[in-house]
Length: 287
Image (cartoon, rainbow, N blue to C red; front, side, top):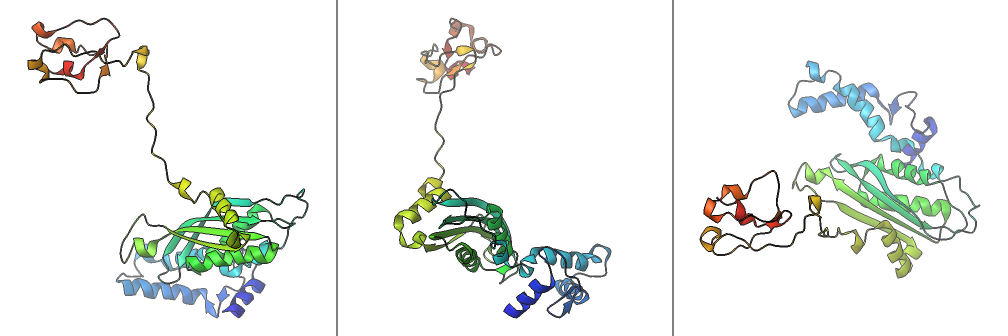
């Protein structure tokens, strides 16, 4: 398999289609025939109008989905920069979107990658970190392996004092089949160097990645909202007699709406006129 990947890298440039259109001794026509076989095995007719071009579309989609096999992520990390003004603090790149496929069921894995490292004299362009993620994600993967591959690539290229990679992923192999559990995400991490050995550095990295307790969304605070026209929210005792308001008013007071004649809905003997701007009890709306 390693020799096959090396052959792919030497016969194609990153992102470009294969010139001879042959991969691992398999031609495009053979790949399209395999798709037709699967369509027929699933119970449909590959010759019907809606499926005539499906094998070609699937072959093109595979070129995109699995283009990582034709890439060497180490090549992206070859160019580094040493003129950083002595900067030696943590560098973090968060929320790198990725799309991969589970190697067990060929189902999509969609999520985000967060990368942090402590430079030791040299850094790399941040876009190259995103390209490293793409290079490993666009293959058949398991999330644990992809996490380790990304961290190892950064370690080999930069030899930093520490590397931390955290990967979040939603696996459709368990949301669209099998146990059918939606809303579940998997989190994996790979820590190297000081990120692994120093608890304070590890905690700082997780703080920057916002993956610790602070990630939990806080409950929204109740805010005082001033009523239109500056109406005060002070409660005015209900003017209704007990036989009308049912023995006492415990409802939340609301500002009077001048467009709604609340008092006119009550019997004439129970109407009480209030000065403008006072708050009426919701019980005044009862007829």
